[in-house]
Length: 385
Image 1 (cartoon, rainbow, N blue to C red):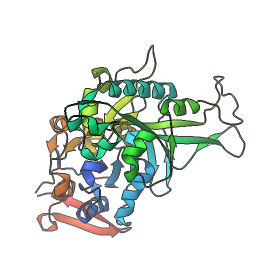
Image 2: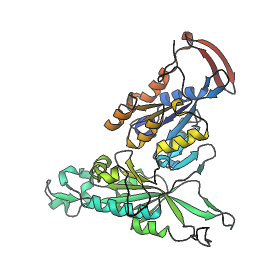
Image 3: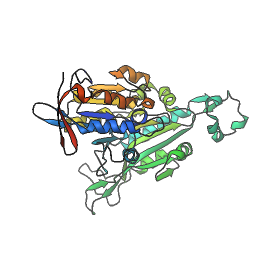
């Protein structure tokens, strides 16, 4: 009997999964079945004639380190991911040491330009009052006197994940914290405060705040290029319209934004615009996406792309699924994702990821197995019938 997860009889060396809409159930929690499936996969070793390699588990999410750690805590130590990509690939997080590395920043001038452009696009979009959920209408000026068909102007709100810079023991060497810090404007706070469980800062003007980050770090010396170190950097920029869900806002944007073309003028860097849920848009630095982060990890750990299986559901998972040897889209995924995936599996409400992983491992009775325990892992040398 063949172990078949793709076009071969080999198990993957790396399983990478998105969180929301993929590994997590609709209530944003991870089920016991999913935890056990990942634990069992991580416990197996793929074997060749010359080596035995454990199957690695990676989480790749648009979430920040603190938010992903909150999910990892639900595993209760049964399974700890080998690697974590945060903020759509802009950060690498080590769940054992709680350290972050390889930050990919949005150029500050481009972040300012993006906030300006998104503000213009959202404010220039009007929707009928009846399109807006009733619980959100109270913040609309004179809403009680407006008819249900009255056009309501877009209400943009912004937030960002910041890495603050600091000096190491008074030297010229710069370090950054162990997590990003969340900053939002008042419109964002009014819309999303119920979901914020961590410390955050509210600003009146996001563009002004972003410009303030360009101010030099206290006591900063000039670098080799003659520039001074800024106070901090932006890992991810977030935008919403209180009148519409993220998919509607995204689809209303000019094609130049949705296809990640130039934002700004001249030879300025590119930025990446996407969304990973119903609430807000996400902006990352030039070329930053989960696929690039996955590629860099695989190259650094000697993992061939054909030995990778990726699970995802929305557009911010696209590059990741395309890079993997097997890209699987959840049954609840975006229509475009289902088209580009190798296969569509069950929904996150049905434990689709867990069922898929379970299907890769036939029962022991169907195989000729040489099994022993090594460091609490099951080592299997499989002779497929």
